[in-house]
Length: 138
Image (cartoon, rainbow, N blue to C red; front, side, top):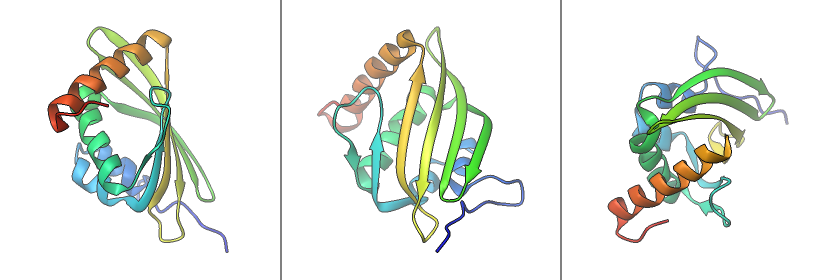
């Protein structure tokens, strides 16, 4: 069975549309219950909608104001979203690599960011934000 990325009339996935509208609750709803999240700043993946939703909320606070998707590629159950943003004075460029489950929800989300100085700034800002949100840190 072939799975296609679900899109709206503008060709945007529900995840992309939610992030662009800064509606992180809706972005969390676009995640599968057993979603896996990986990034260059954490060794172990985050698992589950609740944990990944908390990360999305933190990302929204850290760089969501300036986050803009520049282009996308969709093929089968895969989507690549290229974004730019800022963390303080650091310009950030990155990609969200998404895989969709048969029910059209994001089952895997891998984020890659460049340059190295942006990765370090993102790591530090996310650790501080997660500490603030949970009291436990990253």
